[in-house]
Image (cartoon, rainbow, N blue to C red):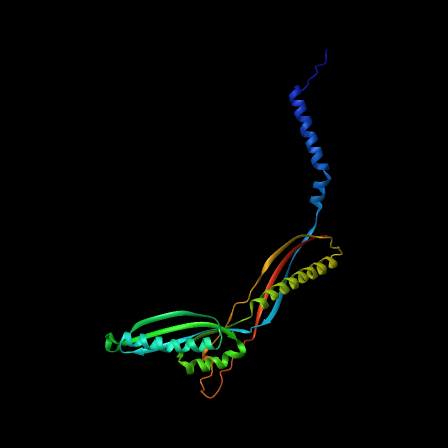
Amino acid sequence: MQSRQFSLPRQRFWMALAIGSFLSLTFTNPVMAQEQLLRTLTVTGQGIERIPATLTQVQLGVEVQGASAAQVQQEVAKQTSAVVDFLRSRDVKQLQTTGISLQPNYDYSDQQRRLVGYIGTNTVSFRLSVEQVGTLLDQAVQAGATRIDSISFTATEQAISSAEKEALRKAILDAQESADVVLQALNFSPKEIVSIQVNGASAPQPRAFKVEQLSRSADATTPVIGGEQTVQASVTLQISY
């Protein structure tokens, strides 16, 4: 009896050989094997820097009530001009108008609406050092200001920029220290930083001051204390071991 030999078609033979070679290269490729064995630790560090708030952002103005719109508007303009002239003489920074309004004033007693006059306002904002603002507020009222709407504290732009850099530096050190603690506890040694993600440093928001806290005594200088602001930063490191 004659033996019968079976053979794959030539095209299928070479295809099978190519697939087998590809699989062999895939499993023995040292670069891919090394990537599969790469071990990394991801840690995030926080940095905080506190800086003094040396600048005060103030909004104040004039409010007048009267019988006629023209009368109110004229009086508001007169008193506001006196306040602005005073502020300019004190060399305040970033002086600008923040609001102007003139509206009717109604009496709603006896379930009826009755026009009793008009209310006019004109407000301005400016910046000044914390050390000067207490005395200036008292003098602004004497110059004609009838309302102090808001006060907030902030640091200088230069101080904030420096604080952001210092907070980032502290965040990096914090991340590295955390990585050292984890790796040492597991008897591993850090090799190199694979990636760095700077989550950013947040500039502090101006800290608001309650106007109700201002002194109402005509014989005393209004006390104003700026306090501190906090700048925070976050950094994420991926470290191989």
